[in-house]
Length: 604
Image (cartoon, rainbow, N blue to C red; front, side, top):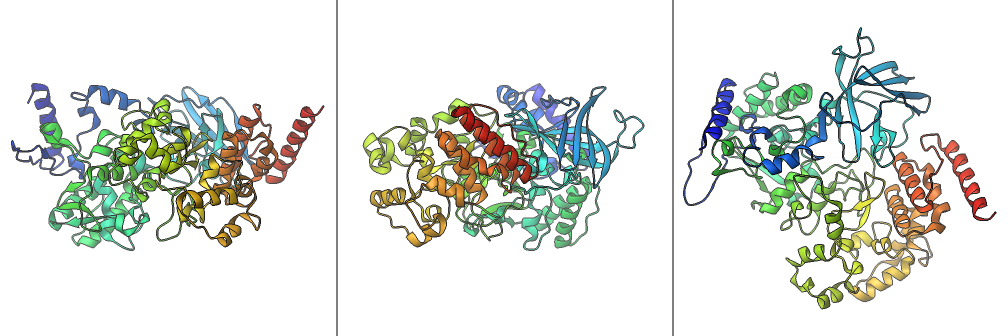
């Protein structure tokens, strides 16, 4: 071991001993590299700063990556949002964003909460938008330096990069219109678990306790997967596990009981009440958020870190008892946070509901990890084959995956598609954009964070009954927007030997299946389906659809309104002067005036 690494390890070991933790080391054998014996407890984590000595290039890229900087403290954060005195109205309430002596504030005038001043303490996100956390300094003698009163709260405005504008934070997801501005969500009880680094053990309390376990920040929503794809904890040494849980409760300032179930219940309660910024392993997502606790690896680099969580008398297994593949462990690492079915929006893809025992896929961002686990390739294909885990994805790389590059990746498991003849026979399209594996099996139909469509990550087929008879629009219409429902399903039936129930199709699209699939979705679809149709019409430059698309400027869900306005601006090549934050009647008046002016300009 080098002198530097020895010193690093001694420092780490002394710190752990000082906290009352014993550091055990595995026995190294020459036959195979050893794996860390425990990577889930607080004492198992070394911190990302320890990784730079050996992985300097990776750590440097990671240091500025959108994932690592998912949460930043205000003192060191680079912020794009202008706190320049802008006033943002919502109903009868408004927020003023302002700066004073280097500090940033949101001044809120609310009919419910009165006149309040919050100083920004943290920034969340930064890839597509910035959200903010702050403390109440309304009564402070000096709002710039005062510690403030109460817990850090999630503040009500987001700054969206693509439009360089402020938006109500609640409208980042599929939330219905809000009548007022409220500041009530406590940051540490909502956002902390996925946007920062905490011990993996924290995520497991509800799984260990079983049915009826209360919710808390950081709980992994594994129950949203089919039972056959769920991970389950297997406890081999309850005393060791209980001791680890007790140490975590104590680290958060709680008191651990002796009984196992009572300890798990207490762990959840203590985590929900006490886990906050002071108890994070790291602010933001550190290396060990994905690679697991690696203190043993830091001590001796012959001991390898592991994506598989284990140690402290615990291991994880699939319901079948089988051990997941390496790809599955990587995918589970991503899905730990990218599994969100946002807000209380009712619907999912595959005609499902959020409240179903196994919901369908998410229609907007941040559900991609779970969606991928629902699909057909998750046992062999890792998320990291397409996405850079250590830096922001290069746009040109992702775009290339929708062509021959992506086809080559798929052909590594499906060799029949490696030739042009095989690809032509499978897709019934000539080699090119129409025979992109990613294009057909991961269609662009989700609401992206930049008001464009993003790919749906549940790998399946546009010919699957669940998609044809459960979702609008037909996925083939996302490229073939000029075709009717009947044309598309008849073609699929002929090419792939399928048969689709016309009665179910009429229930979705209307009695006349000769109707254009995108137009019928826009007229009859659920909100997330309408968004897919709007996005496809925009991508296909269907300018004649502008009046029909404009009807969605008053959609019940404000996120769809923002999405609609952005697509209209892309289609028309000019700003759409409609304030979608207004009540629907006012939006209707402005939209009607804009359409009239546009028509008059086209026919002087």
